Length: 443
Ligand code: UDX
Ligand code: ADP
Image 1 (cartoon, protein in one colour):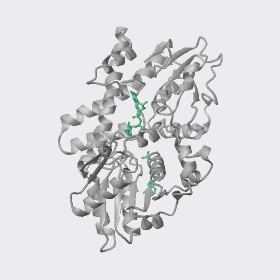
Image 2 (cartoon, protein in one colour):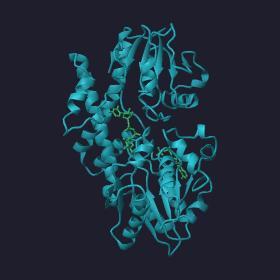
Image 3 (cartoon, helix red, strand yellow):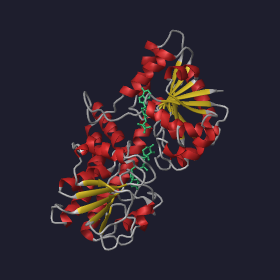
């Protein structure tokens, strides 16, 4: 039986996942470690200012923090005292070197493997939680065997996370499946059994799916690619709806009622965002190209290209309405998060759409109920190639969703519930999420 678990990476994946493991397995001590000291302080601090906002998370943290869930900067010590170590660090798209702009950057995962090798004085089960390219487990094992102390056995399991932000706790409580890839050797199967024991505290055994390590790694990329593909499909049809007078939401409902297709992930939007979809598809594209599967690479690449097209299309819709120029116009942007119920704005369509509106000359007022203003500023600095600190008067931040007289148009980019109940008066609303009954325009 596992007594101590350590998870490296206290972010959107590690935080909620370990909170639920701690809650459901009271006999296991779970410690989340992170190299970011501020993040660990925040996890140990005020419950209203946790680094990750997820419905239901605060309640669990309140219940288990200090009992069997701990947050610490002491990485080596916690690695050493745990029998099982989860790696839940970020794997962004590479920005330089081979595969730049496509392949996943494994530098954080590799740093973890090296740290585990250095700190471990007894056998360890290492669980990949981060989304990784196929065959990364092999690389991790290689580092652990080469750099770890002699006589210590390391087993690697791939246990990709399928939670979606905004519903993370619900998804963890009631997972459609828990996927675990392992080696077929006796020690691999023993490690597998131990992880199954952890999950079987709350997940029915029929939902725990075991595969080889490579299938588990690829299944994560493939699931995200298939989900994103559905969104790009409906978004591509939304462009045709615009031309023909068909209604995208009606179309989506009609398609989704076919049991063979199903209703999920067919909601039109101004483009999908989040830290996973684009990154994972580009990773898949890179993998296909690496193996000489150029046609397959191109097929999946289209999903991302349509997503870029959709973001551009929504921005153009607003700009073209005002004759191709937004000089002097005030646009209120409602929503900076990449979806509702999260404070995460990674790859949010808002970043790109707002930039287009700004570049067309608009005065921009941004409001999001959860994303801190300093994060919005950081996104602008990073992605717009623009220094917000020079304090351009054309960008301002609102503390509420109120629509004042001076606003020429509203762009709804995130589907926060409160946006349904705003008094828009006669302002032109461009509804990127189809949440209003009769906006000026819906996607
Ligand atoms: C996704 C996967 O769903 C999850 O299984 C995986 O573990 C991580 O990546 P996440 O990115 O957190 O999760 O959220 P998700 O609900 O998938 O939404 C991703 C993006 O797609 C959001 O921008 C969302 O607004 C958009 N979306 C989703 C649509 O535009 N239409 C839809 O019908 C559904
Ligand atoms: P995700 O959405 O995948 O959880 P996040 O960026 O929210 O991504 O979280 C990943 C966390 O991993 C960050 O808090 C980061 O500081 C942490 N991290 C990255 N590399 C290391 C490392 N080598 N050691 C410890 N923590 C790390």
